[in-house]
Image (cartoon, rainbow, N blue to C red; front, side):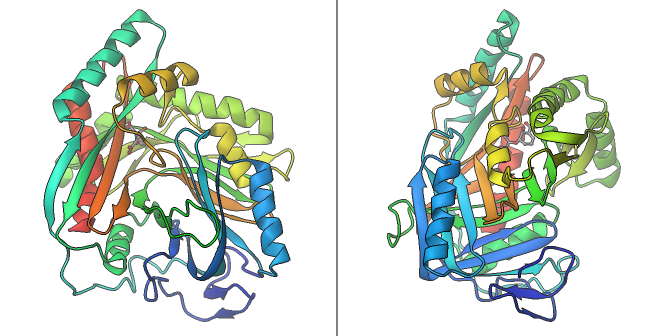
Length: 402
Ligand SMILES: C=C(O[C@H]1C=CC=C(C(=O)O)[C@@H]1O)C(=O)O
């Protein structure tokens, strides 16, 4: 049995394990599934077949996928998935017939430095133009002043054309190095049911855990409120300290924690919510972070079920949720698709890990990618700062790709 982060070594699907903690990227092939958390990594491969579903997510859909896996005799099945920002759209769920797992090696030990030539970015097209994104933020400021909306997360995209296709054995290690405390993923979109080719790959390095479930224990780590980092250590520390006491950012963060806590109280009989946020760092940004843990009242609630109950949180939508969702549909010009949706994995017993699909791109064809980034806006937000913040959020991926 693949048995969780407390045992070390490489775990095979049949329950055996081999010593050492390698990265599972050496044999990575295009079309494989990859998901790494700060403690654990999973790789599934599709070349020997998979079971897939492309429909709006529901408990019945997930159950029927695991039932099919049982009928096929798949040992210890593991589901990878993408749920769109608009959860009424089609989720892409897949159980590859083969997978493996391993702990994360300490630091970046063993991440291979690939020597091959990296692609060059030949064209970048912001969609919409940054000034237009600024106008969206200005419109949101009017809505805040009118009082019906407290927070809305507005996003934009960047279409990137490369001179050669990205090499995932280079891109993923690079993202992992930049994101060792986060969730690095490459999940193909199987959009036509079993046997059809992927409709692209969602690939990225998200800092944000929505839900991890281990038995009846759950962990949720919302982030909201950000500031770009500085290469000068002193300035960097003062930016961090400034974020920790920024009234605007603490307010932006508080909407997220309050909504999550309200929903979790319906599911948990023990809940530990810290009194205030701490600050965590990615390679490019500081974020306000609240690490919540709890115990499920009904341990049959799966990681994905709880994730869907929380989704979309005000970290990627806004407050109040339905008002913010409506304004996102009206103000944004780019379809979010799986960006700001859920990305993760789950076992048949309901244990799993679902992150928010952030700091990511849709790799739609060999040399084309669409990168996405959003920023939470509240009364007092500055359009120019939000343009800068979304550009910084795209930097991790931009630096890793070329
Ligand atoms: C919506 C995104 O980030 C969210 C997560 C962390 C901090 C955020 C912020 O400060 O605005 C956002 O809520 C994104 O990266 O596209």
